[in-house]
Image (cartoon, rainbow, N blue to C red; front, top):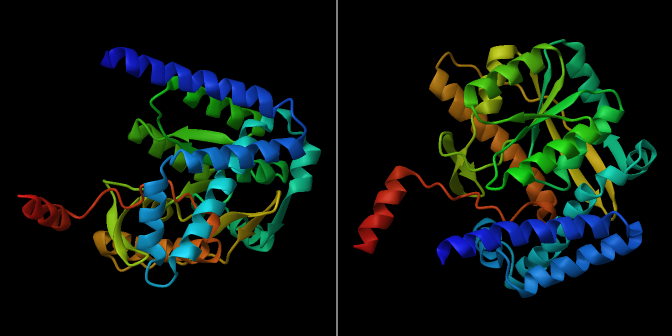
Length: 310
């Protein structure tokens, strides 16, 4: 019975996804956004990951926002996620002219100056706005862009995202196996190209730094790659403005180098995470609150939880 349920979940979800993709690509854009709002409302009513969203929002803003404000952010976050998914699944219908219309770039001078150094650029980014589409505009503007792709339980979904990336001209670097991922990343940066890294993922192999007042397991990749290549580190985010998008480049972030490898990783990862947090605070309804950012807990906290459960 469990095997049957697993098979149904695996295949029914894929069939539903294909139906949604077909609808999105035949409907006019205005109606597509209406469908996105409808899907967001349905997901809210069904409680899809709603408890995770409220847990995350209360952890981040519970001391400074009232329940009504938190609920409003949550509802808007669902709508933004649905819109972003629909836009992403519609990319096969996008023309270069359409991409040009819906994207603007702020802070391009920072990117140009960083690339002029000739050592590549690490785009310090997050799961904010329609982050997967950001690279499409950069590629169109003549900035080769790569990003990481993580494994999924369904190989068909991974293949779909590879096809989307290929269509948009974005290079996708699989995170597994890790040695191959690192090798490709170093090669990419040494060719003086842009590597976008969403550094707000839960990373059990990373370091714990403060994120909204709580320790969060944070990837060390941006620090390690920057130290090995000398690549510039630029804050690189995309935010939604109704049905348009604005890519924001910030001024370069200087690495703090003390000579102590572990300390360098910890201090710089904390600095990067504070930058990410500042953007999420500015656009809270656009972050991926459905994601378990604090899933990994420090070993000391884990032991304390186990002690209380006895």
